[in-house]
Image 1: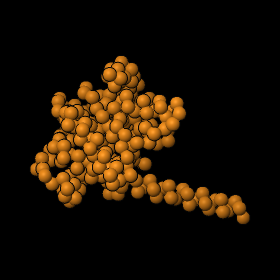
Image 2: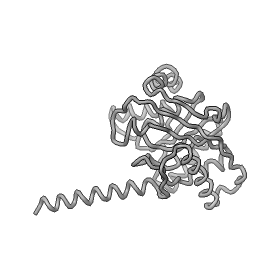
Image 3: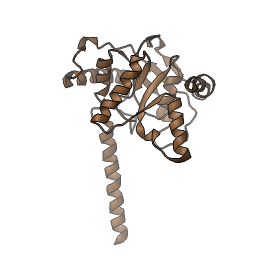
Image 4: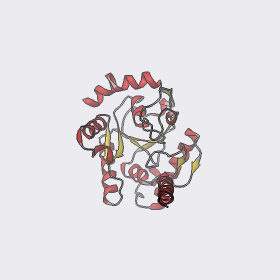
Length: 241
């Protein structure tokens, strides 16, 4: 109930008014049945813009950190993310990743729409990075089609670390649905999973026209963090001399 209230009367109309999203390929969006939307991820507001331009309810797999905060701020954040259809997932791997897979499959089993960011995290610099194979497992086990989605201009509206967005027009481009039924029963074959994931990323690259790097975005972020920490250590050492 809260989801539809926000979408139709509060947050949805506000998003459509402030960002005036233009849409290309709306005919590629299935009118019914389960579907996975595989999107690039360049801004926090991607998770708000995409559901706003879709008619049916949409759920996103979101990092569990958004749901574990304490105090009034933590409660408000958790309530907000639950209200807009975000589902908490643990990215630590192993059993946590399996639980995330099951959560997504439950959404699809209800015939609903599920949004996934194959890169696993926001792009640190606007480039498109290597996709994680978890989306391929979900596609093959759920036996659903994938609609690639390119978010355009959202990074110019709100970059990482920017608290408040700028009110600029953004775009959403829906690609043609991808059918991977030819790989049915091969969801445990890691080569097939990589092939499916790479095909999805190839489509995203064509839709978004982003520069592509065949490395994981998390690796890029880790290297950047390590470099910053190294600089800080050197500064502290120099200051102590």
